[in-house]
Image (tube, rainbow, N blue to C red):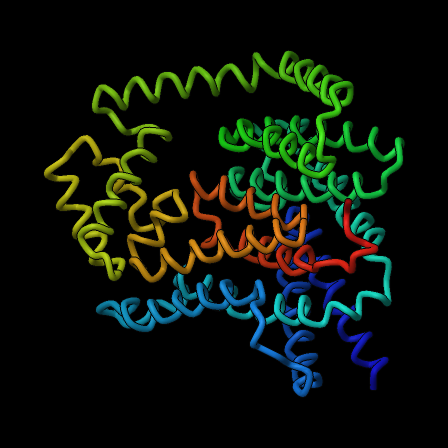
Length: 404
């Protein structure tokens, strides 16, 4: 029986890791592997029910709570004149978070079964192959004329955020090998990832990707290796030089123009519309602090933008989302949803810092930072990716395996 429990756990863990690996390669395979891991986790918990304990805090709890709040909101406020919309993004997100939370609980609660495999090498192999294939896919798309590469996801921005986080995890596991050869590969991977991020044309990722990796590197090594940082910086500058004319300069010029237009009261640009959505979203929260329906949000936003026409572009996206994780949550689920999201951010970062769990900490950094300009926890691909990452990277090692 013990052998069955161990094999069931390892199989669930591997499928969760494979769902991460296939996120940028095949949406279908990502979902298949994710739900296989979920169902195996449920089966494992049923077999292990006598060993379950819910007294100690687990990083799955805030994920489950956020999922439950989204589901309650859908049942309470998600009904319109035609009934419930079963294709609602909020319903889908709630279900994925709830089921994913169960998987995270199982994987982190019964982590002692990981003795059956070499965690570092398995993760390096799976994430490494995923990184190479995703990068190759991006270069192939760029070579064939795609203006903004998106890999297997049909939105370049979400692809950029997920790819950035995947790159951080891969680079961390290269660092963990503690060999000069792997450090060289890590440096090349940093360069490659930055080039791919530029090819996605996603401003937030271009700005923060290298910065987050630099902070992660300093955090892991506990000191700044000037020679290594200088080499990576020089290579990055060369990459910027060669890509500046076709990819970077147009984004800088676009950003400057959009900010200037917004200051003139013209918000019908990508950045201007975001500013308007954030303003409208905050006012929605002030108007309905305990939550409201999508229809109520639309009606109030329409009234608000009629009185304040400088924010009118927000109405183009009000039925989708407001391009900020916290503002989107507050505008619909109110203070309860906002507190649940804040608990998710703070508790997982606190656990990662306490356990000195570098991949979990910087995966959360990616989720938080990129959530300032988009809504990741409504995207099916992003939810499956980040929940699986929290599960497989949220394991605290025994002392002899911990980083020093």
